[in-house]
Image (cartoon, rainbow, N blue to C red; front, side, top):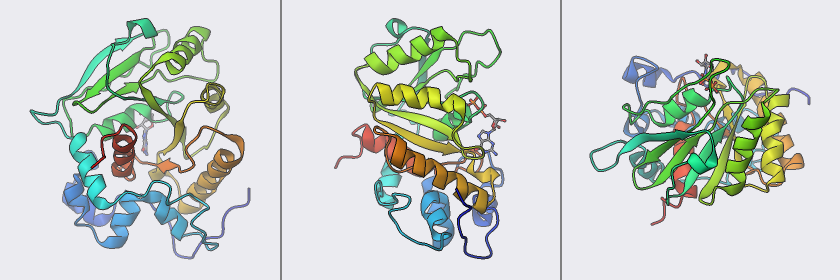
Length: 285
Ligand code: GDP
């Protein structure tokens, strides 16, 4: 695909806005939505709706290109979703248990979402960013070769369960594929699968293992583009448009709108929280 035509004067887009940097002093400090709302309008848009910001830099502007309006919540909805992800005495967010097989998984009545992606795609970092307002939550990482890969279950208050699936590589072991496939196929309360793709390199061969699995099982899934702070706007747009074209033409079950995020700057994290709250039925009035 040709590099998209850009409006002039744009460099790296998704570095942290200066105003937010001053507020938070360090990247790792969680940003509350109340803080984000104090940003100037353009910075707020860039931070909360990264796809919208990218679209703005395309000369051939057509809002259908990137499906901007498919999920387009109000700022109030985003603030409500944040409260679901905020740990309080009355809203416990915690690691529950791990399982290597579906029949070892906790039997939970709540809606469930799972996160899946190849090793190094940024899955642990993203889950940590989603849980940044519940700092007690420990997101376990088991990356050493030979270590058992497990599904990790997290309870988010009375609202839903989030499952961190093991990362896979190009040659995913058969038992791993079996474990993930069985979970995806048989987990009754699974509402949505979040499939992570590294925005720096786009869809890789290893990603197609998971994409094919979701397609074959006719699952509803969503593509999340990680590490958007790492690229120039031109490179990021090229990757985003390529993934969007793939979603439009080669998938049936994938949600049409992409979710670009950065676990470093937290760009896109508030919108993703809101989407999770919405599809688990927790934003209804
Ligand atoms: P996992 O194997 O999928 O759990 O990946 P990790 O979350 O451990 O991330 C892999 C590497 O990418 C680590 O070095 C992270 O620091 C880095 N990384 C993850 N997310 C981001 C991001 O949003 N921006 C940048 N710049 N680096 C990231």
